[in-house]
Amino acid sequence: MHSGAEVLLLDDVVSGAGSKIKPAALLRDAGFSVSRCCVLIDNEQGGSEILAQMGIEVLAPITRRIAARIGFEHNFLDIAVLEAIDAFYANIAA
Image (cartoon, rainbow, N blue to C red):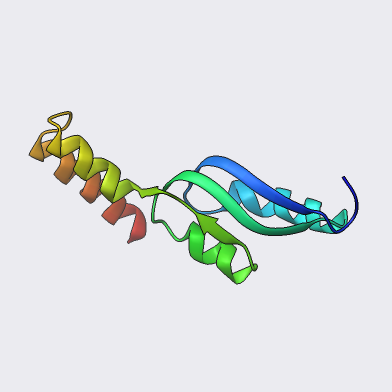
């Protein structure tokens, strides 16, 4: 790869962006361009917004709310578990 080449960050999930910030900075310091990060799930904990402030667009096909809703609709999760997931993330945000 040559200096200035576009690098796509790949990871399973984005939560608070902590595990993406250092690699992005190191790659940029090495002369690479980092403008996108592809993840499977956005946990909706502010990481996408943090990366956006760094000029990195997060591409996530699903959010944790959608994943939980799909689990509920297909009877993998009952309403108590769905509500517990929502409460867990609400407590983290508080």
